[in-house]
Image (cartoon, rainbow, N blue to C red; front, side, top):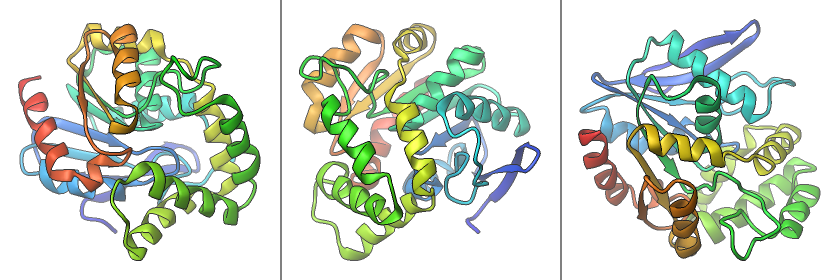
Length: 273
């Protein structure tokens, strides 16, 4: 078990694994689709020196309970609220990566921003899918997203192929060592393919533009986007979350590949918020 690892009971038969280390104002880290607390190990190591840092394995991810229900971002948002309540966290800085941003926006939809000190959204549009893929910040053209869902989320072998290609093509800019790629793929495969498909659909059909606007109007907000779609992403954020600060860095998993730059980018924002 990781340092500070423990379980939070969410409902009968469902526990979420959390890593809870350090002291000070709380920072909560939420990983993306099918990923785990382990992807944030460089942020946990860095920020636990100054803050209480909580990293969460969402429902059906990592070491949390695998369930046949609640595999959607509406439930993930309410799960996040239950973790915050169980750990008695106040004035929280939420940091979500990829579909972890959906969990944050859903939390805001359900509970508002009154217990939030600051928000960091890492590389996801509040509306991940649109027929206007050339103008809007989306995960990809509709046909490509449909093909990914119908082809690569039907069994574990295809899921492995999908994550391998995504890791090498989108998530990381440099060439990955074999053991690094294996580690990334292993994180994803802890979520069974049939649950991964549910989460994929739930995420892709989300629309949190209202919550994105509310968030940046209510509390200090930072959006960090990858270099490969920075121009369109920055324009989309300016339109839908105009008061959010925006930074550009690396690929989709920039917090892992460029951890020192990422952490230095976050430090002043978290300190002054």
